[in-house]
Image (tube, rainbow, N blue to C red; front, top):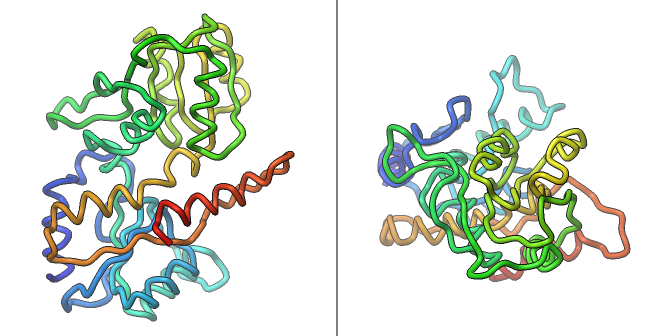
Length: 279
């Protein structure tokens, strides 16, 4: 299968037009017009991920986070993006990005997170007006209300991370909105839907103030809400491509955020990544 054939078929299940308007999706780097040998799926690109692809003899990397997001004025080996672009081209590895188009998938990033904490998903937080069955974020409910401590414990258990949060209107949680990654722009919509709690990442201090006592906000961290995406993409692609391409999940821990606390949260996160990738 050529890279062009791969991208065309991929778009049938994860259409690029379903992603956010300014996101950078699809084929970002093409280095070879030959057949795809196999593909390595990663959360985001680092030099170690490129080395990993070489060890698998992969000539395609599928990344969740885009490598090229802003227009490149130059390609320098003194900058992160320039170094990685050079590394891909030098080693004959193409790059395809599946980001917010997977977020918009019916069982995409937010759905997976919600399912992991025991929510029964009832629908999208924001449905796509033009593409049926696609949207951003999810709303779900617990079979019966749980305490805020139980709610926080469930999130911490799957993210292996300390949590930043503020109190909501009640000490119990039943209806919850989830937007994995940087999804605070959906907070007002979540509030309008009268959820007890909204879980997303990269919430600022003043936004915690805005909803304190009105809607529980929980921020587990950006990587922490999405680290499972590479494995989920592999499972989806293996079913969809039906053996036409072999897929591997990256084993590289890429979270740049360090924690100082009583526990070594980063070590716990890294060990868990090894477990879910089957290494």
